[in-house]
Length: 309
Image (cartoon, rainbow, N blue to C red):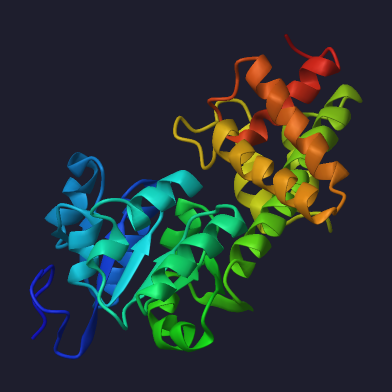
């Protein structure tokens, strides 16, 4: 029988042992899915307090990323940005310092592709495959079992860990070599961002023309322009519906958009709609409403149109 949360040995009863570095909002919902699928999970976070609910529910704890990877067959990380990935992966007591040859390291963050490839090269020197596997979806999407994952890196490593990935979300797509999954995730986020910003623009126009906001939202969600992201984000623009804890606040979403703009600059690929959407994030910050989910850009359009102040 498997010892849940055990930190001794790399596999018990033939089951893969999982490490998880970074127990923020996404880690809080991904780890329970892994444990529900029967995997023993050992975790680490800068603040142990964030891990308390997971530990209570059976997750093991280690005192560093290196200690996590030392007892894991597969080690995940999901942290804030590229600098944080470098720190937890390559820093002193990082994942690379403890990981065993033949294990797999999977970073799930949305970071610059060149950072992913640079970190992957360091793991390769130790005989360890690193995959980039960003998640498309929110915490709610993950909890509902509807999240999708895009994966880049060594195909053989992907084949080995695919069952683990499918326990996180059922839609898993192998994109190609290292860095291509985060490239694709940035492209998806570009589309998502422009779509949500355009939604706010459309609703503000309808409102200025005399349509009630509730009616505008209802009409859009019943139209051919409806989409999953508008289905769960659109209602947030209704009075009193903006959550205190956003799916992605302006700063977080703009982080991804700046990655998009930088990648586009390096590739020489025009992204005028992404640039315009990013400017709306600047406007949200200027108006001091950036603590909200980024769908709040709808309010910027209203203010520009003289509908509110």
